[in-house]
Image (cartoon, rainbow, N blue to C red; front, side, top):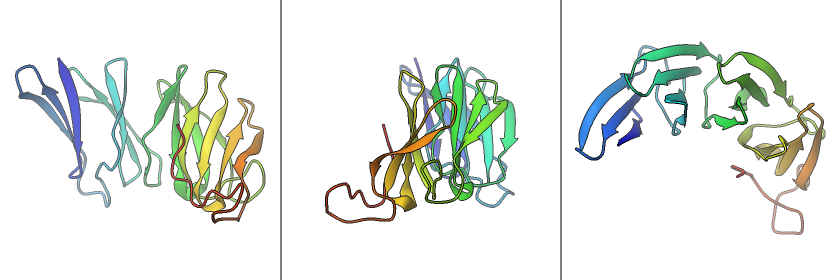
Length: 178
């Protein structure tokens, strides 16, 4: 029985919890500024995908601890990637969008751009995908949740752009969706 643990020093560990032993440790390149893990890995098909604060997306074989691939997304990865129906979704907080990739991490498209319009985002934080493929985004600095169709059409799902507080339809900063 294997489990994974991650640490702020840029390490991902495989632990055999039946024997309480360490199987392997994967380390990031600490020479890159911000190369540490802040969020848990996405795990599926015996691989772990984990982003670091330097903008690298690491793909690690869970059996061996070896790097399968590494992708430089050019901006810090502040939220864990999400896997749904064969696709990987990555929050690009600094560029105000959600990036969609194949399970092999080939880029497909982005959702959102900087702004306050229905299909625009301002510092997205979390992403969730329902069984129909609708994408829900925690639009942090616009104080709302935006939903995107698979074709990329966006609409405000909950909240009022730019309005924060305790009144009806006022969300404040939205950190995540599930």
